[in-house]
Amino acid sequence: SGEVRVSAPGKVILHGEHSVVYGKRAVALGLDLRTHLTVSAAADSVSLCLPDVDISKTWSLEELRALWKQMGGAQAPDAAPLADAQAALLRSQLPTGAGLGSSAAYAVCLSGALLTSQGRLDPGEGRANLEKVCRWAFRSEQIIHGTPSGIDNSICTYGGAVNFKGGASTPVEVPPLQVLLVNTKVPRSTKALISGVRERRERHPSAIDPILDSLDALAERGIQALHDLASATRDQDRAAAHETIAELIEINQGLLCALGVSHPSLDRLVALAQANGLRAKLTGAGGGGFGIVVEGLAGKEDVAKCCLDLETHGYQVWRTRLGAPGF
Ligand code: PMV
Image 1 (cartoon, rainbow, N blue to C red):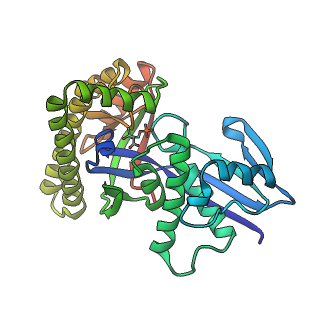
Image 2 (cartoon, rainbow, N blue to C red):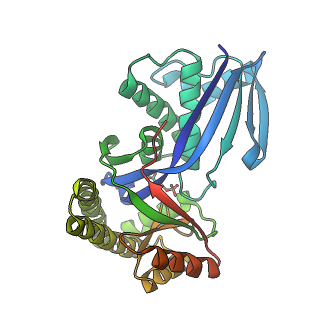
């Protein structure tokens, strides 16, 4: 009854994009750009309003049931949540199709709001409820994307930082991690980039498989470094953890280049960051989209200079702290 308001964060993959598709470890963090959804009861239809991307659509309940059947909804683990007449209004701070988890944040909001409005989440069952939301959001991502690894819906559900492997996610301690989020403004297709990696691997399995193993090891080292940073009490330990994180970022970007998923706009971004003494990598599928620059212990002025350099070269830059809360 009444209105349900929910929100979910976007995401940044720190390590493990692409290799996660092959069952390797990945680590992702919540982004403080969020998607907000309000769901309210309607008369006899389902309406969806997404003003930020200029979409507004209404379906009759009959149309929806037919659609649900078509999507194989009957085989889903729970009954269809889309059974009642509802109106949904979605507002998002996340740019779409850029690797920041806009579709997953939407899927998490929609699943969570519908499960809430239909009384399917149990009071006091925090983690179990989130698991339910995450499972439904994954289903939605499968419909939208085909064969997603599941990392996006996991981080957008749980927030903070997650260690993701083989479809299972566990929370990771989040230290204050300040980054520059950099938009190359170059559009790309996640699907095409994933196919590109698959084809390169088919041509050269003995060369590519060790890269995927390396990316797995990097994610594991990255999680250790986040832990070291979170638990550091002395300045020298904090500095050492920041240095490790920066070096892992640099290695990761090199390996993603070797997989063929970088782009001249991303290579330039990395070089500009490097010229300012900072390390950067692409985040998400690559081929354009977004990159992150880790600030580490760089001074305010150096960071400001790096931002200015990037903006002068046509990039859009946000300063942000990773590890935003989940659904
Ligand atoms: O769609 P993006 O840019 O967030 O890419 C997701 C990361 C991949 O590992 C390339 C795909 C996946 O499903 O994990």
